[in-house]
Length: 368
Image (cartoon, rainbow, N blue to C red):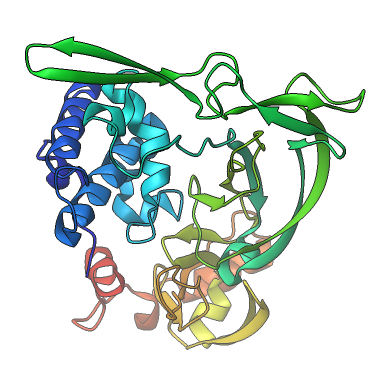
């Protein structure tokens, strides 16, 4: 089933402010929270759907790409919908309810215990050529990230007794209210460093350089963001963050991208246009020969089927469109001028467009 529009999920318009987005998500999260809807798969799906929408719309960069390109513009950078983990939702968005998180808001439900902490994400730009974008490519990227040092050992935090949270119980007219805040000593991990090697920092982490292979699918576009789970910074007692790869397109010398199509401007001489010719043109996969029919007019578009870019969402490919331009010489010799003067008043050289000669707008309509 296709994803619903994120604004529709939160019941907002595209002009909604950051505060309105936050309030709308908070309202839905309370409504469909697992503690209020035990054993209710439908409520859980709506809870996840709201969290996915908030994750994108609360991030200015992702929101901008989504507003411009929709779900396709995220390029795998979001949660991906159905695969969302409830622990990730609680750990990343619990703070919008104040210190207590989701569980404490409803009295400590939602599975109990401390939530899994996640390390910070890493973000880098990856430059790709048009050929790499068209067909997909495997790249090896060098990444420096924080990892738990070899030989480091941890012990339970005495302040929070290993829970990662400091809980307070307050008596009110409505009964006992439980609030929880992240332990300031262990940062919510429930653990503190016991022993560590000299090169490790106070958290037991060292900087490690890694070569990470990544498969780039064909059809990615400028600004798309790919995510590699667990390849970001590690955190003691938690899970590693993600590595976010932002695509940057390198400009090609001869071919221009237009969606999944590529465009090439072909310049031919007046002689070749009149008599016809066989010419060589570049494509993403190398040079090919094409036939220019006699009497070809400037502005004619030729199509090379399937010579474009692979669609990122399927198995189809775009085409290569060739715009034919007849080159008019500017530095004629006296002999060349005399030849053309003799042909100036020939009936065959007078412009005589017929009904079969389409206008520029008709050609654009046919191709696009």
